[in-house]
Amino acid sequence: MIDSRQSQLKRVSLVAIALVVTLAACDQARAQDVNSELTGERLVNARKEPQNWATYFGAYDAWRYSSLDQIRADNVKNLVSVWAFQTGKVEGGLNATPLVVDGIMYLIASENRVFALNAETGERLWTYNYKFPRDLITPYGKFNRGLAVGYGLVFFGTMDNHVVALNASTGKEVWNVEVEDVKKCGCNINGAPFIVKDKVIVGGTGGDSAHRGYISAFNAKTGRLAWRFYTIPGPGEPGHETWPETEIWKYGGGSTWLTGSYDPAQNLIFWGIGNPSSDFNNSVRPGLNLYTDCIVAIDADTGKLKWYYQEIPHDAWDFDSAYEPVLMDITRNGKTEKLLVHPNKSGFVWVLDRVTGKFVNAWPYVDTITWVKSIDKDGALIGRNEPEVGKQSLICPNWGGGRSWNHSSYSPRTGLLYNDGIEWCANVTVIPQEAREGRPFVGGNVDIKPPPDGNIRAHLDAFDPVTGQKKWSVPFKYPILSSLLVTGGDVLFTGDVEGHFLAFDAKTGKQLWSFNTGSGHRGGPITYSVRGRQYVAVPSGLGSIFVSGMPATWPEAANFQTGSAVFVFALPERK
Image (cartoon, rainbow, N blue to C red; front, side):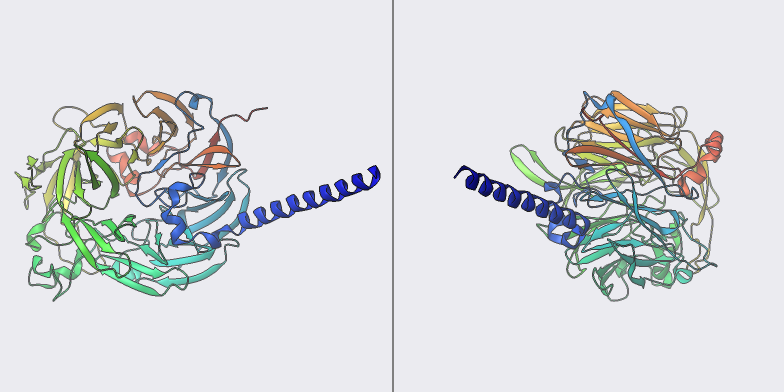
């Protein structure tokens, strides 16, 4: 009787073990092929999966925030490097933000090289090398800012203005479509695409060329064009009347450099539109020049315009509105407002109602602004200081911007927007220039100068996102060119151009930790977890148009070390 019972128990145990092994195998198989499940619906709920960093900004709202809190302000000093991955080429640096989905890291490096890595160990799973024309003259550099993952595919834009989809499990090319002939438009794609429902949405460069900008949506599984929104309306379209009765609208700029955000409740995509061309000589394009320097709200299904807000009408300073549209629900005076908070190249942050597009506020994030005296309660620009033909005008900030394209971050825990700023100016002289399709169309010369109150300098700041009240500030010698990351552990991460990866207390701005990665930072740090352990990953490697121009202002920057590697950190494992 006892032997029989023991035999039964043994059989039950064996069945249980077999079941556990089977479930573990299923879990492993799902982890290996999980991208087939990464649909638009799952991306809508990305905040419920803090172990992943599944989209360029971490989620559709563009916060660059993670609720992971294993790494906190009180223990971040204990971070150690756990692995690093070299991409193999340093030209162009490493501008990208990695993505992590269920334990797999996806990374794009210069020259459109794509890697899949084990996010826990750094082991390379596959590599894809894009084949571009040997005679290609890359209009805006070899670097790339990021990619998108979903439906079992990895998506990215290319140096020669294509969009490519790879099999996420193997790295094999699935489809490849040309957006527009790069030799004709003088443009390409170096911003990260993003997936909305069954579509992959991409922008493009070309804002300093004689070119007409657009946002394109492709069917994610087939590559078929679903819709295209032109940022400069053609004849017969609303807004075309804001351009002169010439052919200049065909060459009017309005590039969509970066990556938009998305509000699923409204089914609206929000995108910042770049400057009009020519950049400085606005006499060739009288009028408001819609939809340049606008935030546009676009129906995700059709590509139709729902609303727009033009931050800088008839731009004369090359102050793109192309930066990240950050979506927040803010409670003030007992009422919750659906807002869009938008840092702009001009040194101001605009705050809009994202349901209606109505102006709420605008506030400065840099100290020295001379291009305009003020912005009134209705959003009107007061006291415009426009450069003139043949005459030098001191414009602050200069055309490099009060900040570069690297992104801000927002913490719902502290309620603060974290942003960086640069105090610098330039003497701008307008020159006549003829528009030639696909060729540079700037219409001015720029001579960088310090601000009237002292030396060129930079700073990292924390603001109330609606009022602009500054909570703390940290000075820097050089501009911060890394995007920011803030976490549920109240830690703010960024990197400097000398190679230091830095951690700050998000509440006070106190520096808590640093690690020298060997090359400066131009990409976006992220955080994720695997098997319960939180990691922080940062791209290291200087590159980009901004970096190539730094030695003119900081001669020593010519000797800053180049590189292209991802460094990954975690707290020491408990033994």
